[in-house]
Image (tube, rainbow, N blue to C red; front, side, top):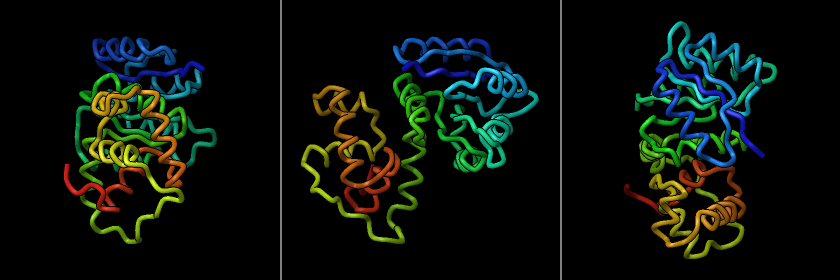
Length: 218
């Protein structure tokens, strides 16, 4: 299945670059481009893409306003929005998630993580750039209010190795290279880990690793 993406970015050269990066993936196609907020909302409602990749700062309406219009609590049939930005600020992350975004990715995250964010959004998962996620988890991990859940089936040594790397913000490609396995094997391990821990996505696995003290430093 091909994931249909709308790209909303006011800088034409960046918008073109995002299209090229996304369409280099065999399972992603860009179905529309918008240069400002109102155009993004209009095209998204017309095209109904699987994922809307929206720049945080755009003319006329910014990315947060676009997100509220497309995925806010009052939207009857919300779309999946991933915010993309150069601004590494927690307040923007919180604002985007409150507005209804399912992802928050920094523009310098690289093509692999950009594609992963689009796939995660399409699958219904939330994904935040690892550098931001790890900063937040380091703040909250040591003061977890409940004991971390124990896996229904014991984790293997390889799964623990993978969890540690995932919790430090590695992408699937980076984990595959470090452990000398294929990306598909990494994905299979992540699926098994989610099943054993009864967690929904990578962010929850990372949170579990910090809460469990499996990881204590970056």
